[in-house]
Image 1 (cartoon, rainbow, N blue to C red):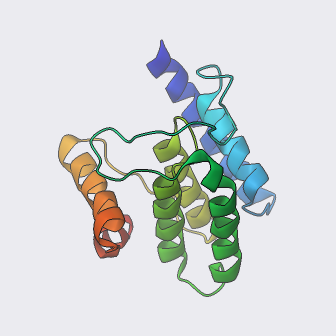
Image 2: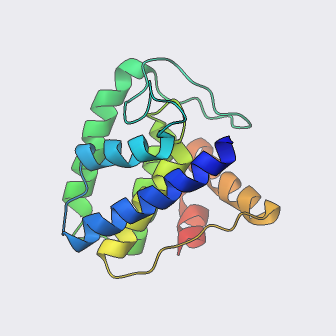
Length: 165
């Protein structure tokens, strides 16, 4: 049942980001929380569209996400980065950066990866690019997680940028 709800939620979230692009809506905290709210709709009503209030670990990763008390400031910095770079960075690099930073901050209890991929696609769509799909096969998924891990552990974003590009 959860897989069915996740698929419906993802469909709704994609429609939402397309609507944001059509209406020329900016990417901001309100819209990020709305995207996340759609991702967890009917799956986790208590946490949908809200930053986490508890520490979390990422299964299979050596990266430890920031503590809950750090999230608000990190997200302010995240949106400041977006505002300062949305005109200067190539849209594909900006999309990859926002994806990676959101995954690193891990501001939500659940749905961080799905939300980060939707943010990436929002940025790409706003720049006239098509939606980018990260393949779900095991090899592609492993490359994706390894590239994110390299960003976090070695501060080397080159593999992740290439994966997104």
